[in-house]
Length: 73
Image 1 (tube, rainbow, N blue to C red):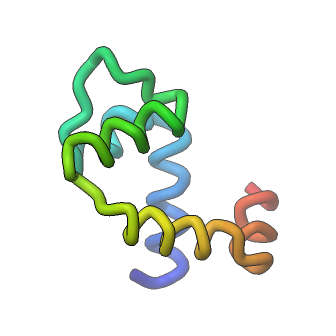
Image 2 (cartoon, one colour; image 1 turned 90 degrees about the horizontal axis):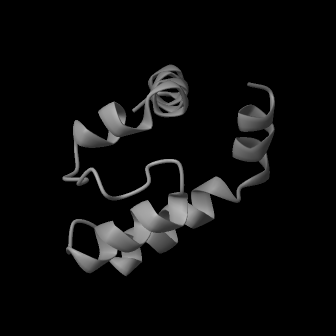
Image 3 (cartoon, helix red, strand yellow; image 1 turned 45 degrees about the vertical axis):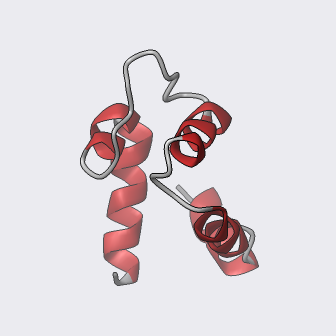
């Protein structure tokens, strides 16, 4: 995924989180898609993502360059 695709995905996630997440994950209606912790806990509990995947994404998210890009939007 190139940077433009990543930024487009981020914008889609911000504008309609349920639709964006539903394209890849099974998120029931009772999960609050506006609460990242609820989403993450559901995905971990149902085995849709592993703790290792979460850890890797957290490292990416905490990267100063990524933080700068996300804060500019």
